[in-house]
Length: 136
Image 1: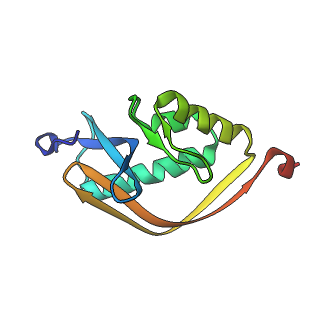
Image 2: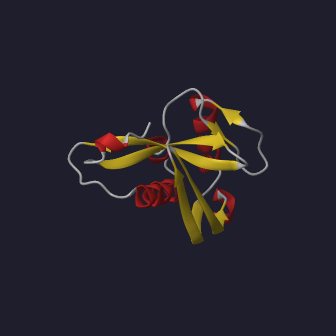
């Protein structure tokens, strides 16, 4: 978890879902030994942007890079039930990516909140997508 005593290094994030008054992303900070420190809010916004870049790429390896590999991760996709654990969460992304030819997001009203070792992002998201069949 986040330790401000190591604040001389730039954090990067691994994401995990946590329920706190609704489903929001919680972020686990991991430190790069060579990069300068950025403030927590900026780091959270960068992690959120990395998640959406991974989503738009439709690349499972890129999506794996933004999630922490622990058994307690949780994810809820629209219309799906609760997924718990690395295997089920990554299998869900694999299914989504296999059935999607295009995914583009327009994010607005992006706001990050940081309280202790918990951070979340609230935003408005518009998206455009196409299935492989629609893309032909």
